[in-house]
Amino acid sequence: MLSSSIAFPPLRLTPPSAAAPRWRSAAAAVTITMRDRSKNRKPTQRGRYLSSEAIQAVQSLKRATLCGAPAAGAVATDPKLQRLLKADMVAVFRELAAQGEALLALKVFEEIRKEHWYKPRLFWYVDLITVLASKGLRSEVGQACSYLKREQLEPDTDGFNLLLKTLLDAEFTQLTMDCFRLMKLWDSEPDRTTYVTLVKGLESVGETDLSAQMRLEAESDYGDLWDFFDEEEAIVA
Image: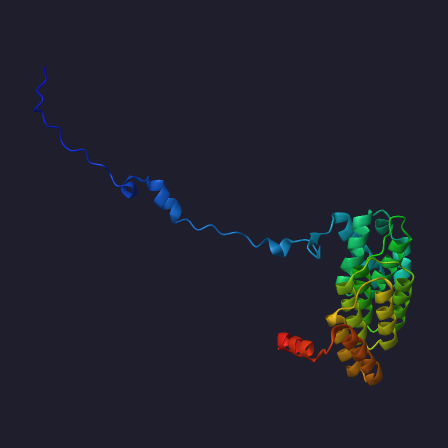
């Protein structure tokens, strides 16, 4: 029989830090570096990748114009463009606009308008008119606006605000007022930003009478706009 007086040595517990395997400490010292993939990224269009077919169509159209082909002819005869699906065709148009290829963007947009699936979007017009105006293509801006007048669009106050500013920055006074009337016709309610854009923009191009008229209209809807002008200037500053 074992004696109850036998004493066992105290159990020594190894601290958790000391018990940790050596590989953990070694792993902690390893620095992982990631290669910057942005340099190899495909051309993007507002947050999405272009398909390989869309990229090829963009490149093909640009090559054709560099070789002397007019934009209309290049677009009408390019087989790569004609084979594109809806999403890719729109992506090609917006990529050309983003790259400053104004005439090509216009001609691709005209092809899009012929498609059975075409449903107008105001932001497409904003993209198109912005690039045409930036290149000083005044008659083409008028042509794009004539297409816009034939459409029936969903209400989009923010989109119209961008369009009005684009036209005023390029000093298209009459087209600006035409689009302002379209805005109200299509139930896109002018907001304070609309009126600030019009009042300031018209005044900057010397249209003081129109600017005063817009100010009166704004005040009938929103009251005195001076406070809102001050807020806008504070934000810009």
